[in-house]
Length: 552
Image (cartoon, rainbow, N blue to C red; front, side, top):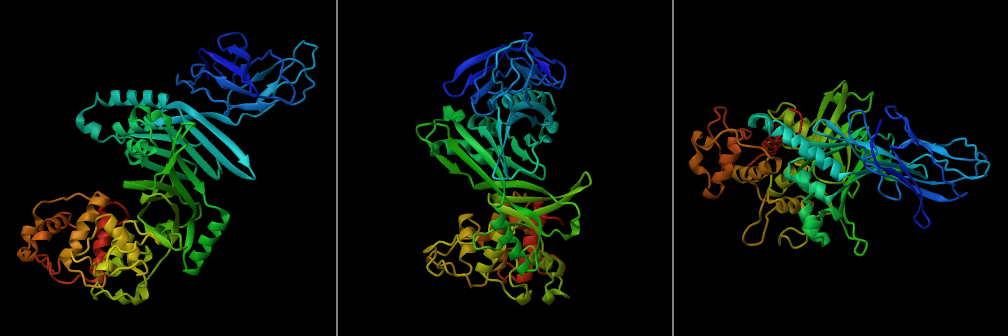
């Protein structure tokens, strides 16, 4: 640690009176170039009195000349004096303990003896480290909480630096860069972790296409900055666009309450499932910093997938990791697209979701008896294990799937499915008590499927292959799956049988190379033929694999 310039100030909390201001360039500050800075204090501290410390952001830097953010608020570093028999001053170590020191003074005074609750944090911008913020730790009733506050100005400077360096690269090299701001959390075994950034730095990250990653000891939460939609948030909160700095965006990662965790574990056991990773809740909350009008909104839905990477505990067989799940209000689980991978000798599960909620990872091996000798065996077993196919014991691979059932398949596969979301009067033939109502409501909200002009949905009507492919084309947009060919439809001898309204979507689906033909020669679409359960499961799995949302 190196000493720069500036002042350390100690204030009395009761009246904000300045007790002492210490110039770091003076003789009272020693330890330059070591890992501990000692600061001698002269003033007399009253017994049983609370004080707080402010440190200029220019006072200290690390060995790479990255300036520490300093402390500019009253709550990060506070202490209350106790009776001390040793007179005189003491020394203070930023981010460490405050201890008393000996003095020749004969007066009996009290000096601060406390352990600071905060320390500086390192923020990493595209691999480059920058000290930019504080990490505050609090333990209450046995629960450890960590609050990180990111210094937006310091991050902005580092972003400008890396962007400037990127502009020197060739265009093709620039495209390969994944812009990311990482906030590592050094504290272990925390029950709750909250990271706060201001709206202006979120907007800056959005403009430069950065992601934000909160990295804890066993969970990383990665969200593109644009998914915060900070301008829309500002409008909702009544904050002018020029005042985005007055918005606080909190990203929270919290372990589930023990009662709920027990309930989740019990539900898993009842269904012959095993919880591989304990449930964790993710939240993004935006607040107005105005003291007059304290508004806040929860950001729980995104336009592109956000990632949660969970480290699989040691001793868990990686082959016994089926999928990530979201915990529904009714106690059930729903599938979340999940990829299992290894890195540095450890295994991880990457869950990708379009919402925020409570997530976990399970082992759930299902074997569907009816497909033991069927061409769709592997695909159907995988989709059943991932909770996409319900009632696998009744599965009939060659039976015709209905519109409502395919809506359920596709919303579950994409990780969109939730319970208790059905809307009344959405369609005249689907009320909120219908077993498919949740799936139909979600599918309509995401524009995956539509009803008929007469106001009906016809949930139990068979779905044709071209209707399924039209839904599939919308799902491709949600996943971000691109076409790998063009006008593939012209290669099929029955392309003229495709309805005009479906032609573009059918071609798009075929261009992606994930929808199977009905014949061994792969030369027919059979657009007007009914769609089977096995075909539906296979098409859904192909979409997830091609979209890199699940393992092959």
